[in-house]
Length: 81
Image (cartoon, rainbow, N blue to C red; front, side, top):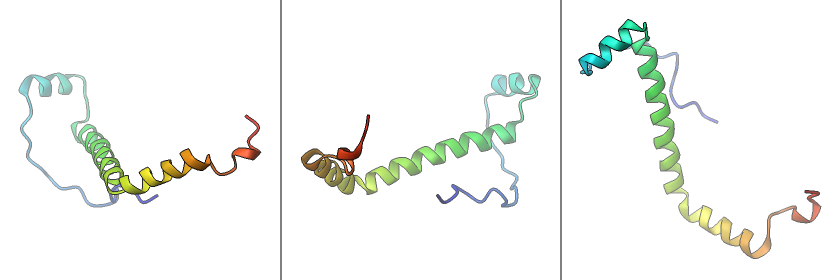
């Protein structure tokens, strides 16, 4: 599977607007804002790419499900469970 992004790419400074109370509470708990944002963006990127893949492959998935419904899964006769 191909990685979502190049984790070795250089960091780039970015200006963001964040709720001041949320920011203060995170700072008080020593939450690493950069790491937290990167993780949240990685999760969102994975979600979006999965949704895009699903949309792009909808016809193939539907066709496969129809074949399975008509013929069963490959190897069903050998399954012991």
